Amino acid sequence: MNIETLKVFRDLVDTGSFSKTAELNYVSQSAVSQQIKKLELILKCRLFSRLSNKILLTPCGDKFYETSKRIVLIYENSMVSIKQLAVSKTTEEIKISTIYSAGFYLLQGYIRKFMIDYPSTKVSVEYRQFSQIQGDIVSGRADFGIMACPYRKLQGITMLHIGEDEMVLLTGMSDKLARKRSVGVREIDGLDFIVFDKVFPSRKYVDDFFKKHSVKVNIKMELDNIETIKTAVSSGAGLSILPLSALREEERDNKLHIARFTDAEVSRPLYLIYNKSRKFPSSAKAFLEILQKKTKPAAPVGGG
Image 1 (cartoon, rainbow, N blue to C red):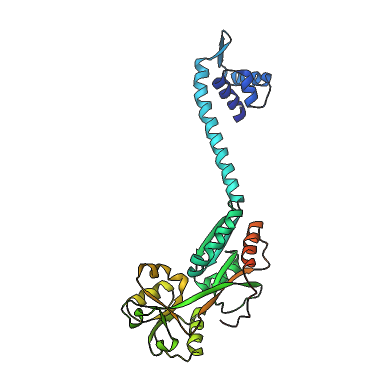
Image 2: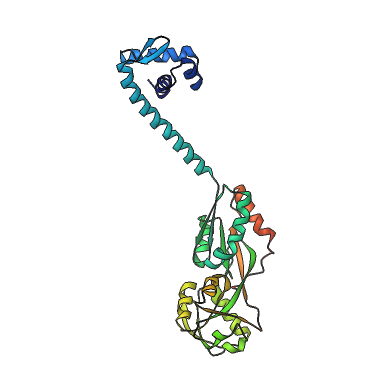
């Protein structure tokens, strides 16, 4: 006795027709008859009785039908679930590790464009610290990484310049500069600043900006993430220079004040990084092509 035989029995009860049962199970009518006879031999009882060209269940058949129906239903549901699982496992997935500001603002446009042509591909985005992103690429935990101002180049890792992230001056609403939409670089000389820890590439970028414009500021706090810096600025602890892409919500809700520099263009470079020796599926290659069409070759990196 097997599942196929139980299904034939169930279908015969449900349809009341040998021909329809044969059609449903891709067998001949004689094969249906033989399987029913085999069941009756195994169970040692009659399952059907005929009356005026109708097939009726005997008490044994009625009992066996309820059991067969449950068994076949469990089997069919299991097969559907297994097939769905197999399909989901074969669906291509692109994994991206990114710093928050670039992932939230810049990356979303690329993903929307990509999904138009590859709607069935899953795109997973994880927001990570810059120090974790290169490790994700080297280990294969992620296919692509997005970083700002990469501080060093690793062997075998390709860096693709994908855009510029505008940097702006951030102040608390009670600060004297909060009345201005634009400021000169010299106006921040001697003021208190909240910046990233020295291990962050963006910190070196801001330090270089101060040095280039001969500005000396008072580093009051060194913090390790943008959200903490924004909280400190909103409390009046000092000013900061942060990417505009991470500040749009605050600008809209008027929680913090944003000012641009009148006499300096400030923007940090953004890079896509990936392992050039890794074999990508077709969807990942297509995603990379979308980015490459809108980019230019990366400039040499020496700690920027």
